[in-house]
Length: 186
Image (cartoon, rainbow, N blue to C red; front, top):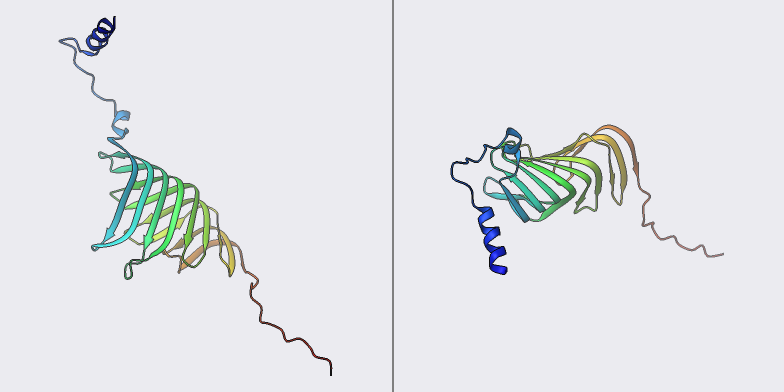
């Protein structure tokens, strides 16, 4: 019985002579050529590592040079010291190999070495201009300030930030106050 079932399955998979497979439709050309689980890709400028892009799953289409990713994590490095300057995580991301840009979407969180946390729903990293920007509302929280706005542009380490239509910017109250001397009665 096992052999009969196996023979039916194997013969069912054989193609009949004279039948030619159909060409893929245009929409099928957008389907990924490769699926990679646990992807790790270094981005390099002039031979120096500038970032590490990681994804839980990556769908690579070589015809369009587009990689769609799920569970994205990007680590940026200082080009002089090689130390980590910031990390960005998001639910999804699209890497365009032609433009050398990465578009992160969904619960985007960026953390810097200076304890700054940026939150937004959309963030774009442009490797050619070495710039991060967003056209979505954002907030930045650090030990010294809180900032929010409708859009921004910044370098990957968030040292230089330009805010478009700021909504709020306030200095946080200092956590450390100078010690006070107790008053001694005379």
